[in-house]
Length: 263
Image (cartoon, rainbow, N blue to C red):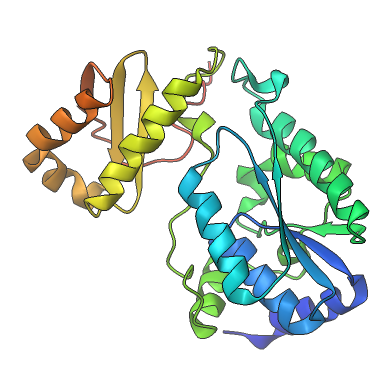
């Protein structure tokens, strides 16, 4: 890839050290942590916030990746924030403002006063509320500052042989629930188990959206036909998890499908 954004990123990291990285184990934060480790050595530390609405496999992946990269790593375990109990429409803003406040406290205590996170240029419009919360907390996004797109992050991850280069995006489990409804821990667990089951069947990009006791499955359009062929086994597996109805969304996988429809 073009080396200019990378050179700008290296200069930016050197100017900021020491730094804490908000580390989810996804493609963006993994690349950021890997480059920061290379540039700053022991003057970087990874922090992962653990909440009830994060996938447990993602936490396990983050722990394994930090160990593989040889970076100091701290988990910050939290209960369900009361401000998110009813899954509000502005949950992304509220979540990031609250979680990054806790992360910043822990990072400062550990001797890392500056926190970085992995948003890129493609996120600027799509996640504007979340980015607003980060700016209010004075969290920096060096990929945005130095001009990285998602495609460039994936390409550089391939060049560096990172295992996350082709990893699909993983939004938090609250995005599978209707806006404004009380969040039940058993629903989060049921959704996580259903998506895990489908990924084990090689549906890489998948969402199970919850509507009462109905599961609305979204997969990549190219995989809809196979899911219909496997419907009897999938229905049985999801019914065993407690779903009463199992449906396939004919539009396929899409982000934000639980968001309110504009009037």
